[in-house]
Amino acid sequence: MSKKISYYTKEGLDRLRSELSELKSKGRADIARQIAEARDKGDLSENAEYDAAKDAQGHLEAKIAQMEDLVGNARLLDENNIDTSKVSILSKVTIKNRKNGAMVTYTLVSEEEADLKAGKISTMSPIGKGLLGKKKGEAAQIKTPAGEIEFEVIDITA
Image (tube, rainbow, N blue to C red; front, side):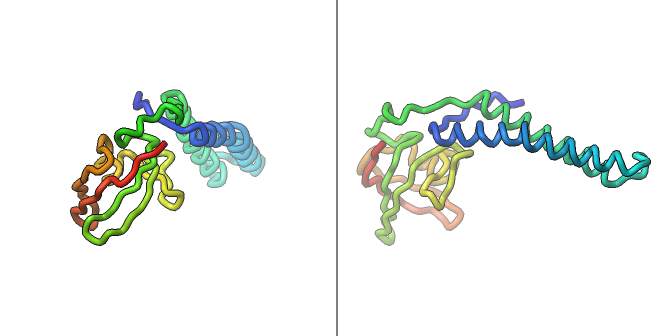
């Protein structure tokens, strides 16, 4: 699998580990039960339920392997050591759209932790990429799906 290092907050890494644990215990138990029930119904060569349960098992094991890879390459970020002189991962940045004056605050996080409703955007998103490394007062020309937008970095906090 990939060796891509991802950075997480304690909350994000705990959520990832919890989901992995759930898949390994409850997910595997549910699939085993489905396979056993299908096996009890007779001839396996013509048993669509058995085939479906075995397919589901394959998908579950692939998901578990993918998540184990993520957790294995995850790095915990110490939120107390964030450099607030420039925008970086875990920075809480307030930006202003120079065209319409709208202001918004985002926290930059890893792709897996991104949640726009919670104000968390990925460092791999167009806005996240465009803001990385910018300092307070600097402008960022960012290509978004809606076109190119110029943002000004108003504030950076941890």
